[in-house]
Amino acid sequence: MKKSYHLFIASALLLTSPFLAAAQTGLAQGPNAGPFQDLLVSVIALTNTVLIPFIIGIGFLVFVWGMFQYFIAGGANDEKKEQGKSLMIYATLGFVLIVVFWGIINLLASSTGLGGKTIDSTPVVAPIPVAP
Image (cartoon, rainbow, N blue to C red; front, side):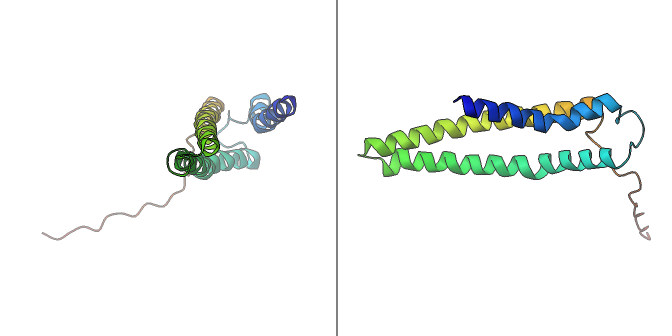
C-alpha cells in the first residue's frame, strides 16, 4: 500500500510540474509565449479529447465485465461474484478519480491561461451568394 501511495505522489508531481513551471515563468501572460506554451496547450488538448475519453471507455468496459462476472458468470459461484463485485467497485473508483483528474487539469489550464486556445489565423470561407 505504501508503494502505491509513493507512486501516486510521484505521478501527481510529474503531471503538475508543467503547470508549476508555467506559473513561475509567467508563460500565460503574453499573447504567445513560445513553443513551450504551444506544447502545453497541445498536451492539454490531447488529454481532454483523446486520453480521458479513452480511459473512461476502458473503465466502462471493466465495469461491464464486472457486471457480467457478478450476474451471469457468477450465478452459483461465490468466488466469481466476489471478483465481479470488486471489479465494479474499482471501475467506479476509477471513474471518480478520472473525473477529478480531468477537472483539476481543466482548472489549472484555465487559471494559467492555457485552456480554450483557438487558432487566430483560421481561414474563413465566405458563403456564395444565391441569385433570387
